[in-house]
Image 1 (spheres, rainbow, N blue to C red):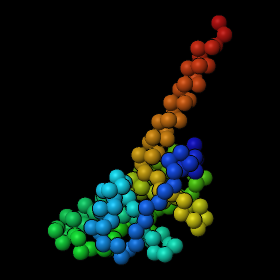
Image 2 (spheres, one colour; image 1 turned 30 degrees about the horizontal axis):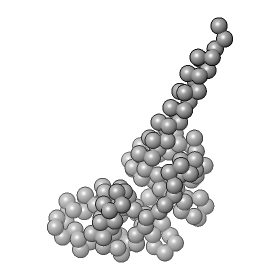
Image 3 (cartoon, rainbow, N blue to C red; image 1 turned 90 degrees about the vertical axis):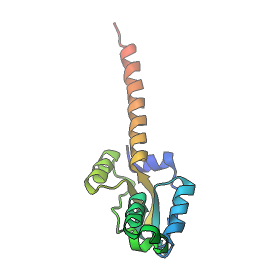
Image 4 (spheres, rainbow, N blue to C red; image 1 turned 60 degrees about the vertical axis):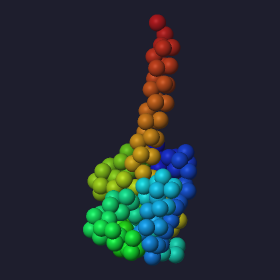
Length: 144
């Protein structure tokens, strides 16, 4: 299964912020939209990712003063980016190797989506279920 197939099923809605967005505003967006990451854009350029991990680190470090921070101060700069023609199994390996739960997907210069580890797990589970169903049908109809 290719990443572009997962994106086609999941959808490719992108929720973005800028590096100057207040961290408190970004956190509110993440909570309101029930998402674990935001893409950080500077104009048309992908400059980072903000996940709950970075938010928690900022809160731990700044305490109650975290609200004065901007996204650009805590985001992951230059995140790992993958292409739509990558196999999902390879994406899983990349996510494990670089220890990230969210990966932007870029097709050439265009950002086309973000996949989470949850999205990948769901796609693999659905693919395995489909294959299992086909195999059971094949076995059931095996000539005696």
